[in-house]
Image 1: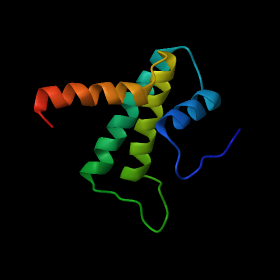
Image 2: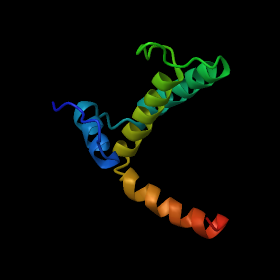
Image 3: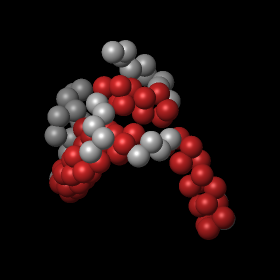
Amino acid sequence: MTSLRSNITLNELQQYIKNKDFNPDASAYFYKLIEEVGELAEVIRKNKRQEAGNIKDSIEEELSDVLYYTIALANVFQINLEESFKQKEELNKLKWGK
């Protein structure tokens, strides 16, 4: 397995996660995503930021977990998140004029 570069693209991150962890059962990732969103809410409420390079129990850790499971779900449904994000931005421009 390759290690992650510091300047990885969203497509590369999506492929990395697919190679590392793929389960065709979307519910497994969905329930983990919901769990991680709850944990994110808790650390945001407590404003627990990463300290001295320790990511454990921090907003940074939980945001990373939410991103991971979002990407894992996209992989199950064969969705290219980079392309979907671009398409959604175009819709937002039309909707919000920005």
